[in-house]
Length: 100
Image (tube, rainbow, N blue to C red; front, side, top):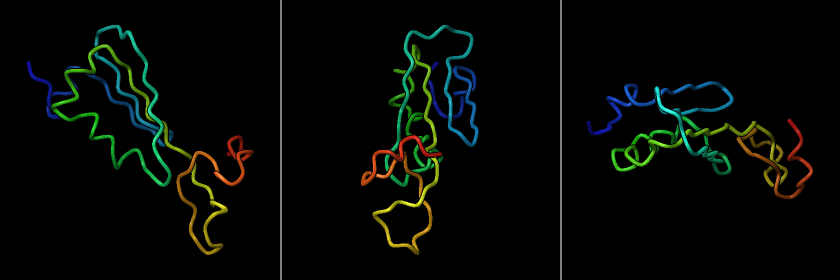
């Protein structure tokens, strides 16, 4: 059966929380675990559908995929009136990697 976004739940389980999205092969052990870190200002919900594309789905049989959501923080490289954005760290201060 060809894997499509419509029948993905027959082949994979999808768990989505505020901390990220996990895609796990259904009733099948996986060989590989992929952790995909998104870029600055991105939200997991904006690009997760790329993993559900018909071109990529057949390649995911042996993978469990986790896409964590970066925390919201106020980047120091922005103006003070800019709203917080999703960022793993502030590139001007690498010590913010440990900040939550």
